[in-house]
Amino acid sequence: MAAVVALAVRLLAIARLLPDDPMGDNFYFHAQANLLADGHWFVHPFTWQLEHRLEASAIHPPLYVAYLALGSLAGLRSFAAHAVLSSFLGVGTVVVAALCARRLAGNVAGLVAAALVAVHPGLWLHDAIVMSESLYGLMVACIILAALRVWEEPSMTRLLLLGAAIGAGALTRGEALFLVPLLLLPLARRSGWRSAAVAAAAFASVLTPWVAWNSARFDTPVLISLNSNEVIALANCPETYYGTELGYWTPACYRGDPSGDEAERAAFWRRRGLDYIRDHLGRVPFVVLARLGGAFGVYHTIRHVGFGDGEGRPWAWGLAGQLTFLVLIVPAVAGAAVLVRRKRPWWPVVVPAAAVVVTASLVYGSIRFRLAADVVQVLLVSVAVTAVPALRAPSRSDSESSVRGARRGKADRRTAAG
Image (cartoon, rainbow, N blue to C red):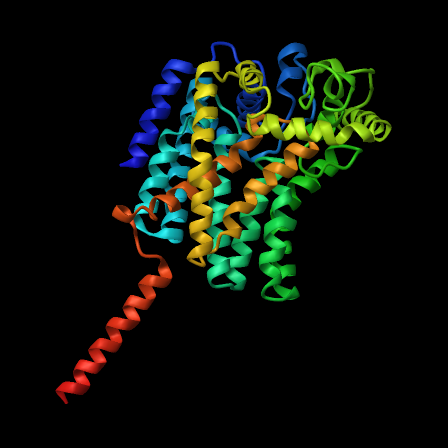
């Protein structure tokens, strides 16, 4: 039922909120998917539109575009059609989040998580405007589910699946790379160095085709995407350290006119940004605090919500998503406490939120970057609900104890009868 509601919410959002003239990242994903379906493999859509010239592009990771391209191959080439395809990703997030919550705290938690993901504006809004967060939300939920399975019963197969899931997440949004040192390797290390090596190999094997192909296309090495290189320049300049864009990014940081292909230009911007950081190290702590405040919507809230308007996120619904996040903070903290008290695996659940902190600190403060934390928050809130006396569901350990007690009781009765 929650999946049906989720799809209805997203389709209604598409009907009411679909951008008339997408011009940012959402246009990039949409147009590049159509070009990919036409046989032009990962070329820059803006260069094609403006100059009718094919230029190799790796500004964004490939997985979300590849998913949309499957629809384009089937004739679903319009922006609205791609938004509908993204909505199905949101429905998938509902299902997987419910499985995670059910594993953590039982059926009630699963139902609550499904309902929250279905209607949370901070989650469905991405689906309605064709953004890679649609797929990344699903990837985060899959990663958490895979991590919980490894935590409960480690095996090579489960570690392989977790490594592959994080690899797929990184091919959706680059910040998933932080989950390798924060989640994958520590979990695998519990079973020994051999297991850690296997998990790392599974992760690397998913990325290898994309990395190898980019090595053939560009003279400069490309790991996941080139966008992060430009961002280093766009988020580290006078305007973002001392000016009105503190903690964010601005096109005003573009200073220079590099030549070469996309990778060579990105390398120029990376050097420019790193040079500025080295020259202003004393200011970095203040900038990082502003970035974190922006990512979580507690610093210049209205301004940061407004930034999303330029990407197709209506201001009112962006604010609704931010208010939802703020309202759920306290019950999410309570949910984490419940997991600790019940000795359930809390750490694999919260690590994706920690990755958001790392990402915002290193890049810039954007509410978009908070998506993984929104998924984590929903799971923790669903656990907190099960601690309400009227809705309390037994934890898995309690259930196992009950089963063992029932078995002992049957054995005692048999002994007495004999």
